[in-house]
Image 1 (cartoon, rainbow, N blue to C red):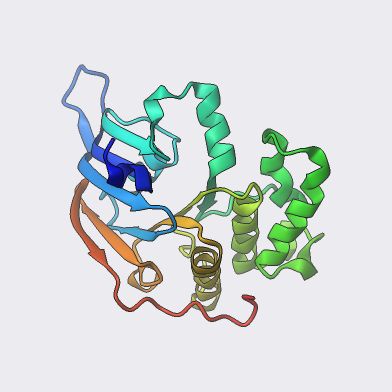
Image 2: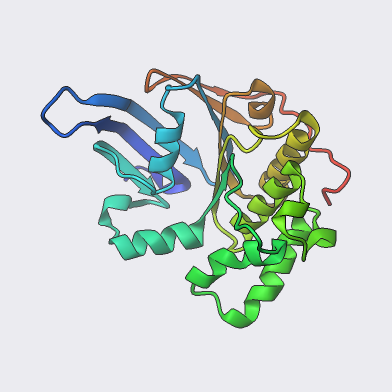
Length: 246
């Protein structure tokens, strides 16, 4: 392992993902993808539909396995983990935010946020405090006991972010988090993301096709037809200023 890999929370080399049962020519969704993500970086991954963005997110989030190539998370090759260890790693070190929110219906905000704790090793007596702190961190203390049907789309996404934060993960993976939101709600969600990165040191990997969303990141990787097209630094990030962000 190189010194650069040791400093990185994510390190992938020649990552490839192909689909097919061997009886036909495989469909290659991702190929020859290599990059490192230093701890605390805000990375945006962009590309048109079918470019491999979601496939890459599933691999990085340990939701799927590559066909070939290597992936080190916190310096350890993910193939060395058992399935139980991978599940624990996803719960403890990774938070997910999806475009569709994925909240439980007929369930309060705080109980939705508390859900990952049921599968964690965090003592039960800490759950309520952790959930409340996570909800407050996204500016929804006044909605704590409301059901999701009473929330706007932007508020639902903020609940999803709080749920991703409740176990205090190292990395947050966000898949098109502003895709279902109006522009004002989208800006609020991105302000939260940038605040988590800049003030709390969270490593964030954001999947988006929107330039205005990606401009909150400090680095942008562009995919095209399953391969890396470019890897650039953002020299003038958008401001994370928002009235509720403390």
